[in-house]
Amino acid sequence: MADEETISVYDEQVEAYADMVVTEKPGKALQKFTDAIRQGGYVLDLGCGPGNSTAYFKQNGLEADAVDASPEMVKTANRLYDIDAKVAVFDDLDAEDKYDGVWANFSLLHASKKDFHRHLLQINKALKPRGHFHIGMKLGDGEIRDSIGRLYSYYQEDELKSHLERAGFEIIWEEYGSEAGLSGEVSPFGVILTRKI
Image 1: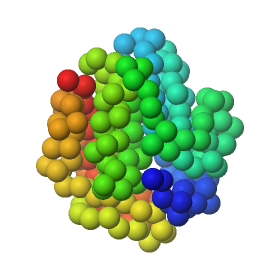
Image 2: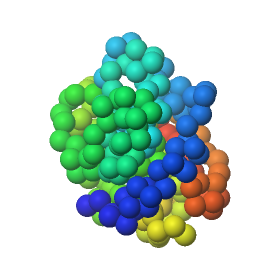
Image 3: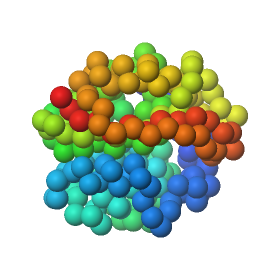
């Protein structure tokens, strides 16, 4: 179930968040994912935020669906990039064998721990055979709200990789680091590119 307090924070902070994440050049993880998808492939941006990643996919010859739980993020994405983003939560994903790739960049960290593995299984189901799945997560322990009220579910690196493997994904690239987010708090993170087994 989507956390309404988290959604309301993104609704209120949409401009600040867009300023933080929209860049002129793609990051390494975005480029790796895009390069992994066949030309003309069909991807889902699951938690699209202000839409910059979806816009990049389309500029690089991919078809893309974009969804976000925050209505204001969706409005901003469509205003900035005209990508036909739609309001949806993780539980709305009911596709089967539809996508060549799913991009979930720092979105599933807002799923509760009790629902996380179920969402991974649904993403696997939504992917075509050998489809690619990118996930970005903050690392740590527990379920905690940050200083501006967003709910986070944290996993350690080994725990996260175990979830992915048990959900039917093989890890093909990963990178770890730390940086400040919207709240200003510096957190460790991991970005992982996988392939459906």
